[in-house]
Image (cartoon, rainbow, N blue to C red; front, side, top):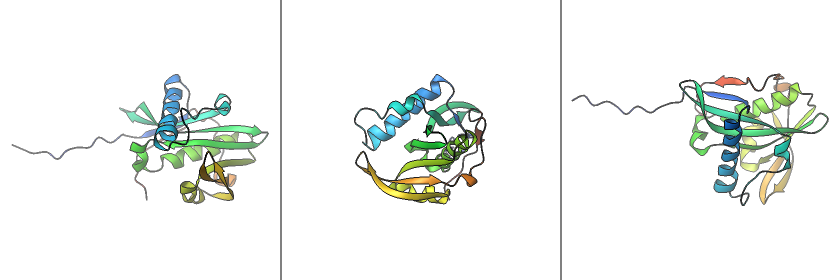
Length: 180
């Protein structure tokens, strides 16, 4: 009898794009609840607020046979005042954090999308443990703040590092990679 080594299924890649259908919107909402309510206990029942009504929601989608299968990452962006954009609620599913680059690619799409829409300043409140990642991505800490009882840094993106993305719904396809 020939014994075969177990084969681990690996997703052929990930779509990084703006949510454009109900499956993606529901998946982003469920993932945020899983991360911010159940895992991190930052919010009691849900993390939704008035920004969700005006925000552009971006997603990372795992694929099965090259078709979108599951929302495994999300972030939202919105324009607070002309040219001033914010990113918020960045979340990557715990089971996909080892993939690497999903959060990075969502951040890149967020800033590139805002840059194409007339952004002159892009800000985010970043949980302290994620500040090193954002610094590597050309963000600067402006101040430390406490939000919802959790230490954050208000950070600003270097827009020169993020070329405009005119069609975030098309987004891009990312092959799997490991963290460096």
